[in-house]
Image: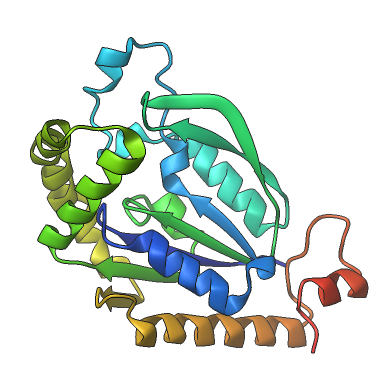
Length: 231
C-alpha cells in the first residue's frame, strides 16, 4: 500500500509551484502531502555567509539526496516526516522543521527531480513544466528580489554563472523522463485538468482494490471518510 506520487519538474522559475498548488486544489488539499526538493539543500551553516553565496545551488550535488529519498519513501509508505526548513536569505537550513503529514497523494516538486534514478523510481506520474527561458528568468528575478532579499546584479550573475549552464546540463535533459510535458500558457487549465483526472482515476482504482495508503495506525473506515476516500 503506497501513496500515489506525482512529480512536477522544470527549470527555475518555470511555474512548478503554481501548477502544484492548482493540482492540490483540484484533488483536495486534505488528500495531499507536498514536498519541495528545494527544502533539501545541504546545510551550509559551517561556512561563512560569503562562502555560502558562492556555492553552485543548481548542481545535483547541492542537495542532501539521502534525506530527500528517505522522506519521500516514508511519505509513500504512509509515514509523516519532519521536513527541514531552508532559509534562502542566508543560504542555509534554519534549524527548524515542518511536519508533513502522510496522505494518499504526494506532490513532489523540484528542478532536478528526474535527474537521479533513485528519485525517479519513487514517482508514479512525472510532469515537466516547459517554460521559455526569458519567462523563467523574469519570474526568478522578481521572486529572488521580493522574497529572498537579492539584488538585481546578484541574480543576473548567478543566472549566468550557474543557473543557465546547469539547466542545459542537468534540467533540460530530464524532459525525456516526463510522462506529460506542460507548455506554460498562464495556468494551462487543460494540462492541470488532465493531471487531476488521472489522479482521481488512480485513487478510485486503488480504493476499489483496498490498496490505498493511510497514516500509520489510522487505517480504519472513519479515517478514510475523513480524508475523502469514500463516496
